[in-house]
Amino acid sequence: MEVVIRPADELAVLAADVIEAQLRKAPNSVLGLATGSSPLRVYQELIRRHQESGLSFARARGFTLDEYVGLPADHPQRYRNVIAEEFVDHLDWPAEQVQGPDGSAADLTAACAAYEQEIKAAGGVDIQLLGIGTDGHIAFNEPGSSLASRTRIKSLTRQTRRDNARFFDGEISRVPVHCLTQGLGTISEARHLILLAFGEEKAEAVHQLVEGPVSARWPATVMQFHPHVTVLVDDAAASRLELADYYRQTYACKPEWQGL
Ligand code: GLP
Image: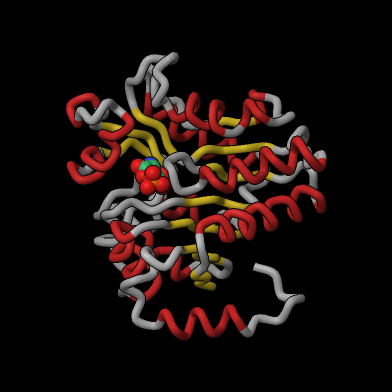
């Protein structure tokens, strides 16, 4: 696991560099997309590169991590709509090549199984972007999630619903109670995991993710088992890391030729 502690703008460029290199090497790559505020700067940087230097997504596939259950198709917080509005619609990426779990399916269990199959049929995810919840969730794998879990229905914690109420006019009662989410086992199969976290409110979750014992109590700790993880954090999100000096020094001394 590599931990990079730098200002947010710089981290967005680093993450965009990895994605650009992947797309230039293999234009039909499979990208794992996260919603939430953490990856927004990366999306903006990639949009800029598409517009200014022709970076193309035309042959790529995309899979989002999760979706609320029961939001109407035109709801602005439906993650399908969020990712379209913030990212995909600004690129040459055909909408049908970007998929998400179907939170309005009549049979949600079947929709989860179908989503797993779609990811598999696409050859798996090359690069998975991730944020982290203040309770240590990745995607919507709340505390107590099996470390081997697959795409399934979950109930959101009160803490997550409170955190996400800002997207629902500040009304926690408007935040859905249920969601569909890729499981921790599903996410772990992506070939490169890039997690972004900013701000003091993420500091404890980041500390647990990097330095805590692996436990379903802090679901992101499953990433400690993964062979290729990059954790991109600003000073505030890194403020509870016990070995922050070591991570800073390691990155400062990193040879130029060694990418993320
Ligand atoms: C949300 C999403 C996650 C996201 C996380 C953090 O609930 N389901 O995929 O990573 O919470 O969100 P943010 O980046 O806005 O802090």
